[in-house]
Length: 468
Image (cartoon, rainbow, N blue to C red):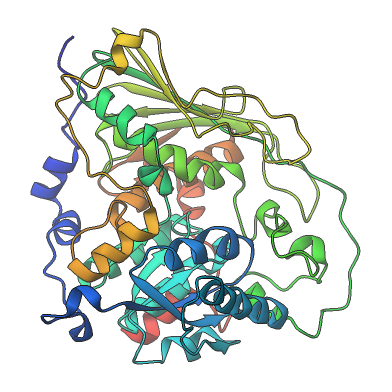
């Protein structure tokens, strides 16, 4: 089989040679918290605060940290007091079920109080997308290491700000693109190793399949629950009436929250599942620190005011080396790498192809190829670190100060591709992108969509200006 000829003109190697940001991110001299140093350092556990105690925290982030064996959750925070209580009870139950002595779990309704604690090493941020940038920045300014749920930020401008802040700091930030740590089969890592080792020959095309979110009629206004700080929940977004459909369930923490379907708080599946799949695609393409040069898309956007994220969508992106990437709801939920000598497809283990739990499950083969020989582990020339749990990878890096699997520069580029795709779907016309300048070429309308206004007193840029 031919050696891969995936272009590396804007690859990780050349990016590190020519870009100070990339160099700083992947070769930064990091400071180890003094409490984790010394002869007994391996036994010292990282003290973690959990910000956000909803669905993704209780089903994914809290278990990931608590089961790592490397950390203790000593503080929880949520601006919904019901969820705050549930979060603390979740942590206490974990220790009780393991017959372990629980540390004292402090509970906060304001993330700033949690970040003010000097005894916390790190925080996990499990919040709606519109809050990612501000709180991650605040945590970095407070000297905390950060595990940040994907997508990295709501806007491209926030992504640039957060990335540049992280690489200038001595902090570890890992974004929750956990397909890099997907176990026990590690099919995403293996697929990217196969592609980068030239198994499909010269890589020509990449196909990403994304699910579609259903919409529903707008619910009328409701009284704000007394347990919810709704103004802070809205954060930098405009003031709009409260209805449970817009925010999250007041009865079931594990149910899928409504904010995932509102463009003020989330861009839809293009960043929801897209953050995962574009990260994997960039990994396999050897373009983790690059981006598309041309984007063209179309999408169906409901006229509803609340559940108004895109439905069906189709985006075509052109990358350096004339690699063409298609992201659409018409493909199976996963990533297909297509080259001159065949294709390799990778997806999650027996996942549904739609986000609606009532929709039928379509079986997907986690790792497949046009020829089984393409998946032969013998002769693989490119190898990546093995990681079976993403939170553990982050915590290991908190202790070692090594670069995590998905640091800010890499996460930003994957998120950027998703956001650019969303802009292309909104505008419905071809767009040219300057990968180095990170701007659309001669397109003021598109460039204006790279950022959003911030409602006072909230906002990542307002925070950054005050910390300058």
